[in-house]
Amino acid sequence: MSIQYAGGTNVNATFTGAVKNDILTNVESNLITAGWSLVQGNVPTAVTMTIASPCVVSWTAHGLIDGTRIVFSTTGALPTGVTAGTVYFVKSPLSNTFNLATTSGGTALNTSGSQSGTHTAAPELLMQSASTPWSVATRIRFRDGGSGSTCITFSIENSNSSLAGANNTTNGGYLLPAASKVFRVVANKYQAFIFSAATTAARSFVAFGTPYLPTFLQGAITECGWLGCNATNDTDGATRVSFRTNLQHTTSTNTNDGNFQTIVNTNLLDVGSSSNLTAVLSLLFPSGPARGFPGAQTGFHWHDTSALMQEPLLMWPTSSTGVEALIRGQLWDGALVMDTFAGDTTTTFDSHNWWAITDADSGEKGTLFVVVP
Image (tube, rainbow, N blue to C red):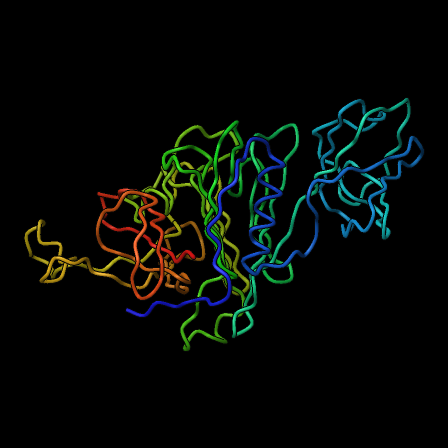
């Protein structure tokens, strides 16, 4: 097999995600450490706002663009016209100020009454992976959906945001904050896995990235990105199929799979809250023995009983109507080991340290390992 190493900085870090802002702040900082760049947005920051027509929000060097979603909180009372936890949109941004609207491109919002306390603004964040040597990059958008959501929601976009997966309570990937809940970020400059230690925790696994492309696909694929999670919506209490628990899909309808989004060239596939999936994001498994062998002869171990290893090849179709899933590329810093390991097992081989993303997938007897520092 041929492992494709990303080079650069590998991140393996934990943080406590007690509230949504914890997730926003820590995911951003860890992706930046891994080599991702900030396209727009900022960490939650204290701001001031006027009681005026229209309201003016002051935030020094905010870097937000027109139409950015933003949510406010306060230690006291916001002006009348602005409600804590409600999604607003940045309008007419200048270097240090902007107005607000209730819809993207809508009329500037007016405020009245009085205000008190310290106000905090939490915008959505848009980050971009490093560009591969063949000039392919993927963007990831993540944000607080406001009072109607429980999670931080993730979605993918292509390198200029002309293709964008939906980011709402039914489409995208979800991380649910909770008191004392610890998340781990395993990332390099092209991909990231974010998950809790409890492998079966709902709304606790999101992964995304830009895959490695073999030479014969470089140039044929000009945009390529993927995102998967273990939930079907913002309030889903079940643990859905994802790379954290299952690498393959055992039913013809795949009704238990989490949401996913993929981009290849001009095609965007955005599957959310589906009750009858005929298309999934998955890894390619070895075919096993020739047809006619007894079922117990899986052929996934060598003579010395060491497990077969192969490239973690990503595959997905271009629609959810049952068309063939094509191999689009390969995970960076990854190896697919054809045996069952507990999630978060660590090991060392090929002069690198490795982390088991998949937890005890006995049904398919495979584990995804990725490089950590």
